[in-house]
Image (cartoon, rainbow, N blue to C red; front, side, top):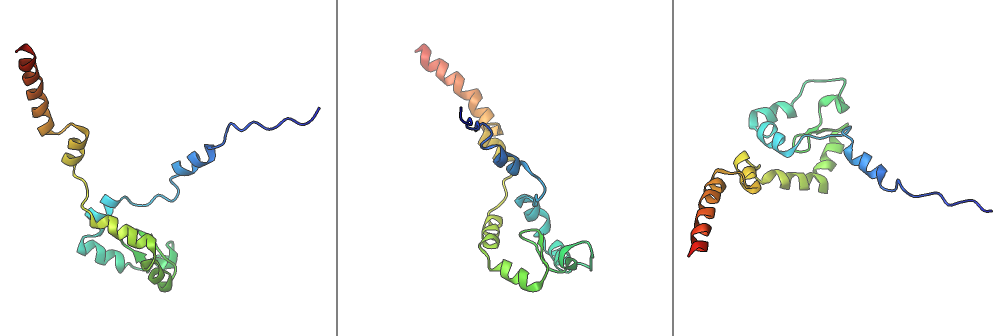
Length: 128
């Protein structure tokens, strides 16, 4: 009798665990737009004091990507990369407001009024 083949039941479990990891979590786009991109905050982030705990002593920081780099050359090459350009394009779009997200979910004020009016008009149309 030969060796039985191993069952393949945990095929995609590794990818789920990788996606759920928060070890390398970055700032969200709305956090960067509303706080870091302000001119006074941006100036503070770009000219930070020396910090021995951060990569490159905290001197080479990309505000759009919220990342520290070891050298100025690494930061310059990052600015030319697709990742940075994609992030800048995403930051150029305005952030969603709470009202827009509620309207998309059908919970906005306009949708409530429309819902209150619609059933009354359909009842009248059905009774004729």
